[in-house]
Length: 490
Image: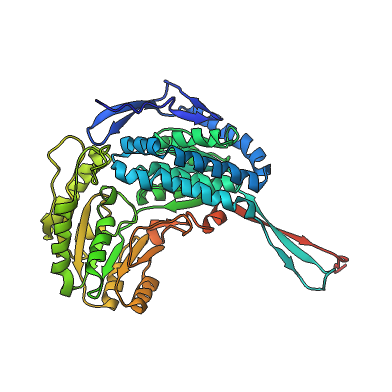
C-alpha cells in the first residue's frame, strides 16, 4: 500500500497551519518507489509577507521573555520529540528515503538533543562586566548580548528535521524569531517541528515554516526585516545567498559542501578504518556533506583495506524498503540526484579509476544506487575533485605524512577531515595541519551538539552547535559607565 504523508497544511505561520492553493504545487516523492505521497503548495508572496510580519511582531515579545523560560519551552519540545520519535522518524524516512534504522537514531533524536542543549544554555546568555581602573568607584564597562531579530533558516534535503532544529534551537534560545524554508525536496519534517514547538508553549509567530524553491528563499534573504540567514546547502547556492545577504549587510552562517579527506596510515586499526570509510561514504547513501570521500590509504595496507571493505559491503548491505528495519541501505533522495551520481561514476571509469565494486543503478523501483568504490584514483580526476553527494568512494594512495597533508589541502573545500593511526602525536599533527573546520581522530562523522560544526574556505562561514553558535545568533552591545566628571579640551 502506498504510504500517505499528507500534512495538515503546506505552511505553519503565526502559530497555525496555513494553506493557499494559489501557490505552485509541490509534490513529495517517496524515494524508495518514486510515488507521490503528498502534495503541498509553494508560498505565495502574501504568505511570505504574513510569515515575516508575524515573526517581526513576535520576536520583540519573545526577546523580553526571560532566558530560563525560553529554555523551558525548548526543553519541553525536546521531550515531545523524543516521545514521538518513531512517528517523526517514519515521516523523515518517507521524506528522504533514508532507512528507518537511521532516522530512528540520527534525525529527530539529534534535533531533540539540540533543543535540549540550547534550552539549557538560554539562561546563561549574558554579557560581561569590565573594570576600567580607579578602584571600586572608578569607571567601568559592561556588555549586553542581544538577539539579532528575525532570522531566516534555509534547509537542505539530507537531514531536514535535524537541520531545522540545529538552526531553530540556538536562534530561539537567544531571543530571535525564525522563518524557516525547508528544501522543496523534503518539506515535511519542519512542519512537525513547528507544531511541536507551538505545543510546547512557543508563542505564535516565533517559528514559522514556508515552503518553496529558490525563488521563495531569495525573497526571504533580500527582505530588509531579516537580520540573519543560516543556510545549509551547496557551494553554488551559498555563493548566491552570501551575495544577496551582503547587499543588506546581514549576518550569515553557511554550512556548505565538502570533498573531505579520510587519511589512513599503515599502522591504523584496519577494521576501524574500514568502518569509518563505510560511515563516511555510505551512511545515508552517501548524502552527507562532511563525508570523507577522498580516502587516502598507504600502499602497505591498501589491498587489505579494499579486500575487507569489499567483504563488508557484500555481506552487510541490505538494500530494500526503508520502512523495513532490516534495511540498512536506502535510495538516493531523487531521480536527479541519482543521475548526477551515475554521471560521476561514468567519469571515473573514463578517466582511468579502477572500479572495485558497485557502479550501477539497482534493478528495483526507486532511486537506488549500489555502494560504489573506486581505487587507483589520482588527485586530478573529477571524482577526486568534485562533490558527488552519493555512495561513491575514491581510494587514493599516499606515501608519507607531508605528502598527504599537502594533497588533502589541495581543494577549494574545507569542511571536514579524519585521520586513522595508532600514533597519537602524528594524529594531532595531521589534524592541526588540515585546512578543515571539523576533524576526527580514529573515528568519523560523529557530530554531537556540544561540538561546534562547520567549515573553512568554500565549505562555509560560522559554526553550528556548541556554545560557538550563540555568537552567531547574538550581537554584543558595549556600555561605558562614567563614574566621575567629564574632561574636555575647552
